[in-house]
Length: 195
Picture 1 (cartoon, helix red, strand yellow):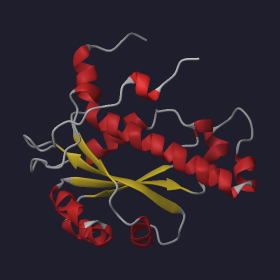
Picture 2 (cartoon, one colour):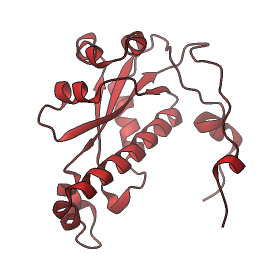
Picture 3 (cartoon, helix red, strand yellow):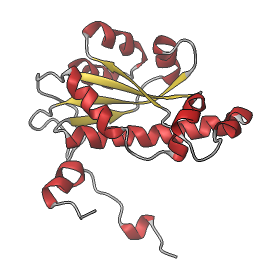
């Protein structure tokens, strides 16, 4: 592979922002499918792919989410063209016989529910990050957020208990000045060590 060009790095990381306001341009269903088709290739442990996604576009769908939101997030969700509930499948391992052919990776998760919960959360979080990068790669802007009651979201959207919500992403085409001033980032020296 070759190193990516500056404009690509800008779009994915350096100039990309967390948006709180979006234009009225809709996010088409086909675009949501394209995001998924791109992000699904990001690596997960034993190819477990526990991420699950609920796309809320209609007012009625978003109204189901609003009671679980902190007050400061209500207007953001209502105004975004789409909001994605990023969740993980607690029984992701049921798909492993088709997804991981190197050896039987299913049994350890069946026998150890805590290990399965940890793997679902960890790898579902990774997939949520891949989702953001895929959306940015396709020209969309993202507003990832917490600030909601996971229990309420799970009761409303995943009543059988199999899926567990992780975080939300407001998705669309960012409005001019639709973000806060960029905050500083910690330096390499503050966060890393090479041994």
